[in-house]
Image (cartoon, rainbow, N blue to C red; front, side, top):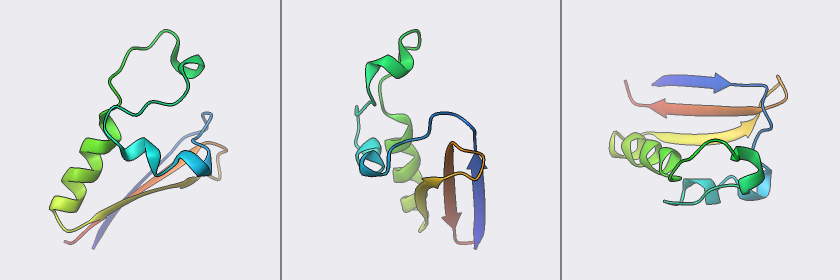
Length: 75
């Protein structure tokens, strides 16, 4: 299996919203991104592509204080 981990030191995503952010067009509160426009599709697309290859994508807390994204796919 191939595992890719990306971590940051940003605001993270609250645990109770981590599944919701994978829904198409779902966006976290507008106050986080007042100057950044988006559609809320990025994580939905990432999960769909990862699963279509037999993998999984998961969100967790980063040791850096932000978000940790772990994508695992068969190699």
